[in-house]
Length: 149
Image 1 (cartoon, helix red, strand yellow):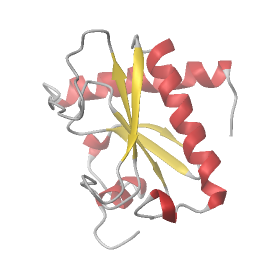
Image 2 (image 1 turned 90 degrees about the horizontal axis):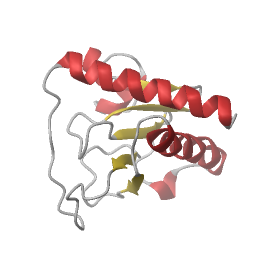
Image 3 (image 1 turned 180 degrees about the vertical axis):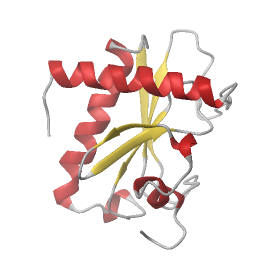
Image 4 (image 1 turned 45 degrees about the vertical axis):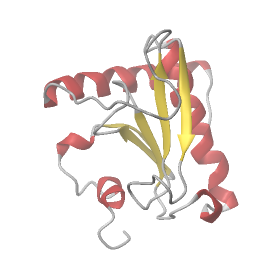
């Protein structure tokens, strides 16, 4: 764990229950963004603490982006999204200094324009837990269709 990194705390299972982890393997963890652009917005992070994409070791490129691909496919196939927005910030607009890839479910006419993203909150921890369960189920369904690492 790197210092007081909140994502390292989630990875180490030191964070409280509102992390809502939707996927975990030896190299990668994915969990709901606590201030989603749209409900289901998921962050995919390497377990190893690195700050930027440039610092990500080659040995983790495939594991991280295989999970990004799996989550993106799950958003469409099992979560009902019309598409996804996948993004990574390096330092600028990176609110947590731990590499994370955003996978945001998109719907036609959802109002997202450019990079002015309105943020919403889950109405309760129970709603967030329900959305996390739906995303986990969608990821599991995609894993059966497209087995990966």
